[in-house]
Image 1: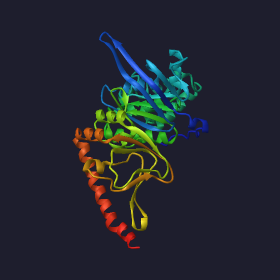
Image 2: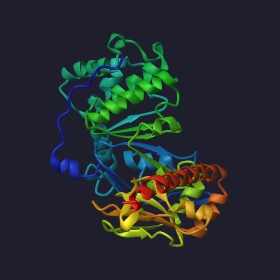
Image 3: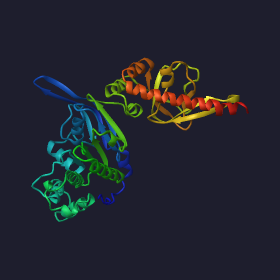
Image 4: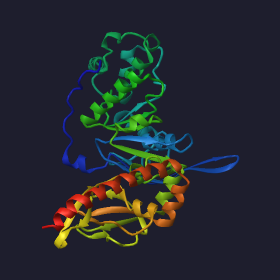
Length: 387
């Protein structure tokens, strides 16, 4: 049973404005007898305080190396890593970085990494001892409070091998929180847990985020990404544009990264027309930010707003897949600008033809939207034209 967390003071305005993680052009190259291998290829990533991020990618995609950059365990070949306003590689020695890590970062491992000869209480106290935080007499009390939080206070004096794997992961989370770090990094934390223990752990993570912590979690479990605030997908050392991940989640990662490279970002001012009715559609549009209105013309030149769609949605697929000209006007919403990812017709059709699952999903969406448009044509527009 997970107990409520002790209250954490609200972050100051300056802390809220400052990114928790800011990676700028991060490159990592490994060298061996066979030559050089570039694992990270210029990663740019910003994560704000209080976000719950899922990092997803196939084995060998660069997930673990990315985490090692964030935690300071490894160092980049090029680029900058700024955590909580601190550049953790430039002008910081290995010993300084190790101490910084102990005071500012909590790490949860897939295999728990508890010391088998120490009790649960002693395992949780260990980061406090290493970082020199809290008075000597206060450390056992704080460790017990954290064990109570994960429902293990009655097992405080047991050794790790005497408890279940789910309970060991609970201890690992309590240990990660020992120094009250603002950032928690979890590497496949549910990989060795049953579904009930995994859900309990994610419940706890959500509670921690609600209390102001930032959590970055590597996972292979797609069901967990639905409970995070963002999903970051890495493929062959590159980050896939998050707008594409949200808009086309069934697309293969190799196609997503191709879309990321080919798509162009365009900004539209409030009320600006993106597509006019009866216009030939030459692009597939994905909404990165803001909203757009889908509008039909009614009687006496009045407009009928049939839909408003926001980030993670797309349009233009009906005309691209079915042929013909636009069946509606599409424009940026009047109450704010919109930023779109725009993909040329040829690139969109070529990639979709190589992904039958995505083609089928888009075909279903096309059919649904056509039926909605027909319903509007037969009801709203006809009623307006009679006025």
